[in-house]
Image (tube, rainbow, N blue to C red; front, side, top):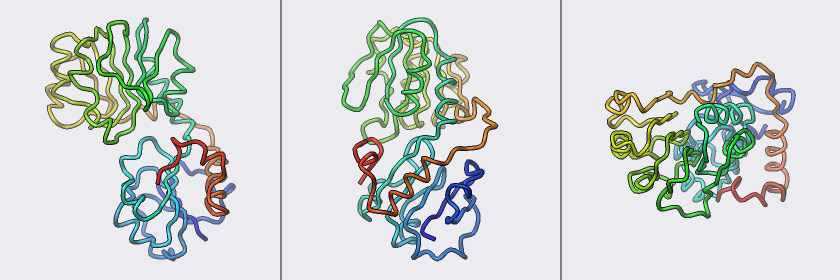
Length: 267
């Protein structure tokens, strides 16, 4: 067996699709797994860094099933020539998108990020919206937007992105974010609500710096990373995409369908 699937909370029924895999919970022992045989590792929450890459010396691919890659050391994966590919966790994607959509008010929306959650939000949203993707540069948010939405992954260009300078010209009513905590400048967020630059904020992941003071304003609502379960999905998970990606990883590299989507692959 060349496949290790970790964080098994979303892997109900995966044996039907990927019978030849080791399946572990995040904290389960892996002493029985022949580490030299593992070529594909799929995770949702477990970190992938120095320890993991040294433990599985012949690892070729990491397939992650969650949102954001901040738990995966992309630089080390690149050095070890380990490819990193995301799946599209559809149930959680829709849950996050609906969580954000339900926070928005009437008016035009500016959405930062154009990944799977953003695309689902674009399907659900009622009014006008604009997209800021990785190729678009925005220095300041103009007064035309009533809603600002953050769906960007954490990386060097998005760290501290949502700061005073970005919002200094805005008159937005609602800021909604599912981005990682380090994408927000907490000191700036406090200033923005105190000066009514932003009337209300709904933040899924909020950093610890000044958190209590932010929440005490009554204008900044912190959800403790629960947007992904906003919709309780009782249906069995469909693991066909995960199987297709793993099959292509174990055959001749990765299929052109995956390689052509640059947002899905890192080296």
